[in-house]
Length: 212
Image (cartoon, rainbow, N blue to C red):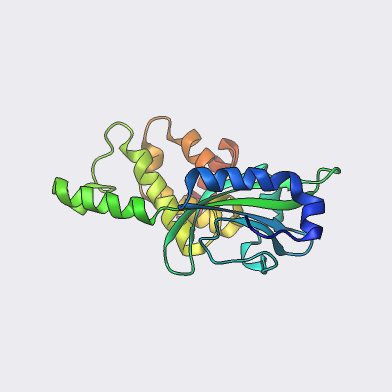
């Protein structure tokens, strides 16, 4: 079992068994990291696939104040130090005054699944150009939208819900240009994925049209 520091044990000990349980269930593909927001250090880690240790800096895992207002951040994509893709989700742990005190980050190494996907695609003889460029039949447009958003998240290195106004405007502009908003019932889906209200989405679209 990972070593625990006294200070972390005093503040976050109740969450260590949760981290251990999640990591044990999905071992060896998932690590769970508890970041102490007061010290910006790793307070605890289970199944360290990132090779981090307790006491290491958490500066690279900082998120915006806006994101910390949420109970759960993500899922979003990250890249491990060795280049493997991770799919992550973060739970914000609050103190007695409901202020953010720590983050429990669950990092899922999806490289094995990506390799299986590529092998299955090769066996099925499906050309890569079928998606997301295929016509938007049924729910295919939702998959294409997700790919577009994830691509932008990878480029920026942060989840879409942590985007500032300019990044969000650029993303919505790209989504609009791709034709997704012409699909039936698309606006609420797009607004939810981007993390804004429908009213805010229409405000962005109005500004985009005014600049055209």
